Length: 282
Ligand code: GUN
Image (cartoon, rainbow, N blue to C red; front, side, top):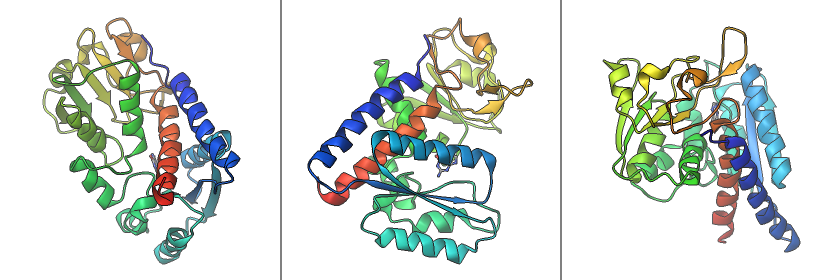
């Protein structure tokens, strides 16, 4: 069974759109997301454009801020500080990666945690660890919604997350742990990776390698969530999972494209609306 992140994200966006329409009818302030893009990384440009389009679709205002790769760390910090105190801005997102001369940690630290719609600020990360309510990273949050949509109960299940990034691997592990799964975080140094993955009732592939996981990594009937966005040998978009090789043995799988990806953007909109409601005391 293919989990269509595209269809599910469209349904969710329509619900978010209704929430914004109610605000408009009530003459309330409209939620606003500010997105900062530094440099000319092509993938980042595509992501940022998609985020802007998604905002338009649901009626959230977007403020796009483009700066040359040569911007100084201090100048970037000043932009964020201005957005922090701008009452009309509910969400602030700094598209990653940043140019090498800018320290990502220092930048993410400056974002007001209440406007941190990526959930990357240390205080939001800490809250995720402590099961406290907070803005949650978008891709992991989207994956949990997908599992929810197929009525998958994680309690007592073996989840293997391959990849330990701050954006995906670590936070999704925490969310699965909150749902009482038994979570293994595997990575490039893991021994016997195939055997580890074969234990998984839910395999989360987030390694960034085209078609890395074939059927030798997967237990029959497993649920597979594919976070990769890669190009295959024919320059075609593909995931970390070799979809055609595994599709007959899995119970559910997310495709690439139109799987996890569209959910990420929808969760960004959802986080922006949540931040708005929190700030407005709604
Ligand atoms: N670059 C790749 N993924 C992400 C993400 O989720 N948020 C931001 N800000 N940058 C990214």
